[in-house]
Length: 222
Ligand code: C5P
Image (tube, rainbow, N blue to C red; front, side, top):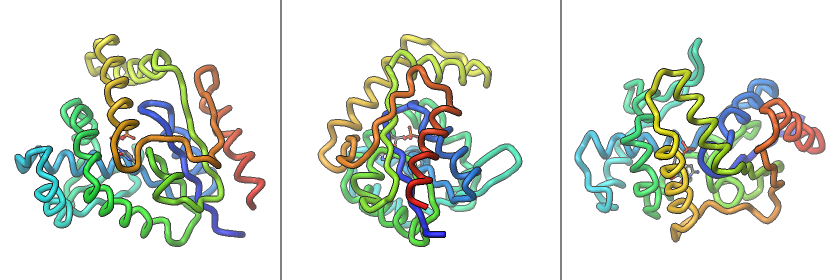
């Protein structure tokens, strides 16, 4: 079977990681959550009191930070220099700062290099903001997932409720909009649909329907 790379991009909470994980599982592919990598360097910057504007300080910190993924019974985990940071990188402090950290070109360059290395042997599903445009421009399958901000906030709100995380819906919606704005307007690798990516609006689709659509695209490549 030919090695295949699947790039899944889209705005915050558009269902990318849920779809990517299910796809990777059913195809037996590796899954790489690139957002988790930007979140990890953001957490490291908070832990080390690095100014979010200090690009060279952030790059130096990143160079000495290892980011590893692995599966455990309850799903995928992320380790930063050997420490399990799976939950810590999802805190609202990290979420509200990550777009400022991810706009620095040298931070992106370092993480993109690591992401390409992970994808070297193919058979990978990678999700993020710039996978189809920058990280894996030759990916055989590219999808750009979108959904209304109302729907995305609703999904995240329900997820938070199920985890017993107290959440204000309007505040959540505002934070999602702000993050999308920053991610779409940065100078380097902004969030944008690749010319050859398939747009899928997931607003009124179930996860299973989205996965089936992407699988159809994959089948054409095998
Ligand atoms: O996917 P997730 O919402 O966890 O991503 C967190 C943040 O990481 C995004 O809002 C964006 O600022 C940054 N990111 C990025 N490029 C990627 C993946 C994520 O800039 N490929």
